[in-house]
Amino acid sequence: KAAEDAKFKAEQEVERRRQAESQMEAKQAAAIAEMQQAKQQQALSAKAAEDAKIKAEQEVERRRQAESQMEAKQAAAIAEMQQAKQQQALSAKAAEDAKIKAEQEVERRRQAESQMDSKQAAAIAEMQQA
Image 1 (cartoon, rainbow, N blue to C red):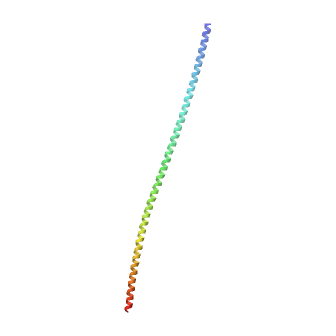
Image 2 (image 1 turned 60 degrees about the horizontal axis):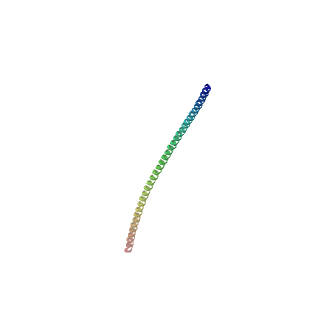
């Protein structure tokens, strides 16, 4: 009877240890699966971080190009304004020159007319004397 009890206890102990070992293996398998899942998540996070970094770099480049284009457009607009101001200054100078020439021409004609009047008056006086 004692041997049977010892045998039974030994079998129970073997079964308990087998179950404990089985639970430990299950826990290890779960821990390995969890680690693998964490690694996959980390890989996904690293990939997402890399993708985000690439997107950010592309956005920075896009904005840099847009800024560069805007600066080029501003420079062109400034150059165009300066050219327009120069053209306006030249036009104003040309208009002033034309006005002076016109005034000189008016004065020349007035003097010519005055001389013509003087000559006519002299010719009339000469005719009256004759």
